[in-house]
Every structure is written in structure tokens, then in C-alpha cells.
Amino acid sequence: MTHKEYNLTIQALFIFIGKLIQILFQFLVPVVLIRIFSQSDYGTYQKVLFVTAILIPLFRFHLTDSLFYFFPILEKSKERNELISQTYFQLLTICFFVSLLILIVLPFLNSFFEDVVFFKYKYQILGIVFFSVSSSILENIFILEKKSKFLVKFASIDKFVRTCLLIYIGFYFKTIESALLAIIIHGLLRFIFLTSYLLKFYKLNLLHVKIEKLKKQWSYVLPMGIGIFVGVIGKNTDKLILVWLLTDSDFALYSIGNLSVPFIATVYVSIGNVVMPELAKYSIKKDFKRTLQLWKSMVIKNSIVTLPIIFFFIIEAKELFIFLFTESYADSANVFRVIVLTLLIQMLGYGYVLRAFGKTKKILVAKVYRTILSLIVGYILIINFGIIGAAVTSVFSFFINAIIQLISAKKMLQVTWLDYLPWKHFAKLILISIFPGIIIICINTLGYTPIKTLIINSFIYFSLITYLLYRFSYFKVFGTDKIFKQLKLK
Image (tube, rainbow, N blue to C red; front, top):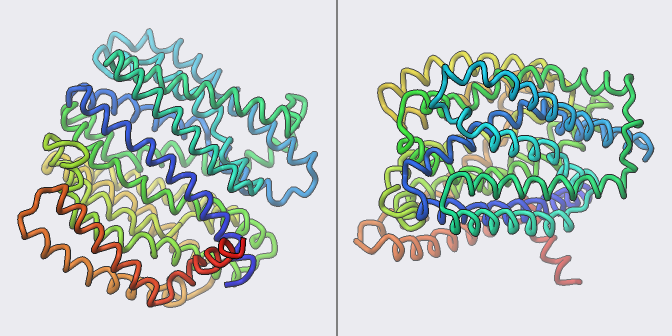
């Protein structure tokens, strides 16, 4: 491992810790809320959050992601200040005018869609979206500044505040509206903090916005931004059809089953956000060799975490869900067993190379194909197999999008399939995971209670996995050995 790769690993590790803390705090919320709300009410709450999850990327229009491309290649602090101001005010303008337009149009449509969640909770939804989007560059700025340790602290405090607000207000008032108000208050606090930070460190000023630089930024984001409209539909086909065809209770079961995937996907975001600026630098020099090396290094790191965890969660899903979410949500375990397979695709980081080289039109094409095929396949699967069909649709959607982008990146890098992906590492990590997996499958047949089974199997499985990863030198691949040595020296 080179010194540069080591520094990237350190930075990625801190970002991962920060995001892991975020997820852990966020994970407490559904555990509490399912015990406060009925299954139907929790399904309605999740539908509202699903609507915000669709609108937020549409409002952002990939402007936040463009920072990872432009910021590293701008050397002067004045130019960076202008980029940050430009992005901040664009997001604010989009949020204000689109929200206003929606509120003007809604009364004309309300009589046709009286029972739709969006109309019933329109103000809460727009409030969440407004503050989420307008403050969405916050973590990106810390990453670009390489303030990894600060990001860990900020992420911890940020999610702690959000979790406390949600649990306290939700528990006290016990209504969907109160839970949504807690999210809006949290978003407002983030927005105030971001604005103060940018005023202090980036001389936030509306006059920094310049037409020429706007054109450059929009030439980069436009294909990806347009792709969002088809990409969001393709990515959320499973939930869109579920909302249309099935009940609030079914949506609650599916949402819980789909809940834990972001916990692991955090690893990919942490590493990918650190790798992306470096890939952007290689793209300027058209250095395909280093691009491939760095990308494969990222994939290997992702797979070290992903493959063992997938095996464990597939085997222990039922015990885990009964313990966390009660017997009422036991059916969510089967949804999760299917959904967790999307991690096999996500761990490949399939969009980073194309984005780094500005090949965003290729991403748009992939999203169009994914949307069309997912809608057709999803409708057939969900109408016949319900929430399990929705889970399979989600996996299918990820696969179509990934395979098209991977093929495009492979052609650009001019490599064979054999050299393109770290196949030997994949095979080795699968074998490492199988042996402990067989042991905990046998333990599951002994008839212990779910919690006892979970504790015993977690200890045995991850102890063996840790030992085997050490024996096969995967701590060195991940750079963990150097991190520990540095900590000891300090």
C-alpha cells in the first residue's frame, strides 16, 4: 500500500466511523416508533419519508455531487469560494421556487387525489425537502476539506440531535405529524449551521455567482440531473408500485425489511467519497492505469466488509428482526434476505469512474434502461408475489443499472473482464465466509431463543471472520495494520 493510498484509507475510515455513528443513531428511531405507532400508521409515516426521498435528489439535481469533480481541480481559494457560494445559492433557489410552484399547483389537483399521502402531508413533506436539500452540501464540504476527524464529531452530534428530537417529540405526542415536525426542526438546525460555516470560511456571497461558471457546472450536472428523473423512478420502482398496489401495513413490513441495507452501504459512500476527488485528478491526465488501480482497491475494500456480512445477515435475519422489531415484523426478515443481495452490486462502485471522467451521458442511458425494465418486471413480480416480489425488483433494478455502467467504464479503460474486477479476492472472501456460516447454521438448529442465538452466533461468526481475514492478510489490504501501528506510536 502506497503512502497516498494509506492516507485515503485513514480518511475513508474516519468518514466511515462518522457515517456508522449516524446510522446507529438513526437505527434507534424505527425500533422506538414501531412500538409507538400501529403498523398502519408506521406504514403511512414511511410513505411520507419515501416521498421526501424521491423529491430530495430531484431538487438537488446532482449539484452537490458536482463539488467532488470541480473542487479538487480548483487551486485558488477564491475560485473554491465562488464554487461553494454558487452551489449553495442554486440549491436554495431551486428549493424556494419549486416548493412555491408545487403549492400553487396542488389545489387544482387535490380534488382528484384526496387520499394520497402527498396531499395530506404536503407542508411537512416540502419542509423536510427544503431544509434537507439546502443543507445537503455540508458533509461534502468537510470531506473535500479532508476534515475527517471533525466529520466524525459532527456526524455524531448531528444524528444524536435528530434521534433525540424524533424519539422525544414522537413519544410525547404519539402522532405522525409530530414525528415529521421533529425532522423539519433538525433540518432547520443543519441549515443554520451550514450558512454560518460558509459565511465564516467561504465568504458566502450571492455576487460570487457567475454565469460562465454556472454554465460549466451545469454542463457537468445536466445529463446526471436529467437522469435523476428516470433514475429515481427506476431506483424506487419497488416502493412506487407497492404504494400503488398494497396496504400501509404491507409498506411498513417492506420498509423495515429494507431498513438495514444503508447500514452496510455506508462503507461504500465513505470510501467512494474519498476516492472520487482522486479519480477526478487522474481523469485530467487520462491516466487509465492509475484509475483502474484505485477503483479496484476501492472494490476490494468494499468486498472485505460486504461478503462476510451478507452471509451472516442472510442466515440470522429472522432472529435479528424479531429481536429488534418484535414478532409483528418477522415477515420483514425474508424481504431483507433478498434486499441485502443489492450490496453485491453496490460494492462495485460502478458509477465513480464514469462520473470522474465526465461521462455522465452514459449514466443517463443506464438509468433510462433501468427505469423501463424495472417498471415492467416490477409490476409483474409485485402483483404476483407482494413484498417479496418488490424485494426482487429492487435487486433487478440495481443489477441493470450497474451492468450497463460497468460495461461503459470497462470499454473506456480498455481492459479485459479478467483484469477489470478482483475476481480472486471475491472467491477468497466467499470461501472465508462459508466456513463460519456453516457453524452458525448448525447452532440455529439447537432451539435457543432468538436473542441467545443471535448473541452466540454473532460472537462465533465474527471472531472466526476476523481471525481468517487476519490470516489471509486482509487487514493489510485494508490498511488496518498501519493504522494500529500509528495509533500505538502516538
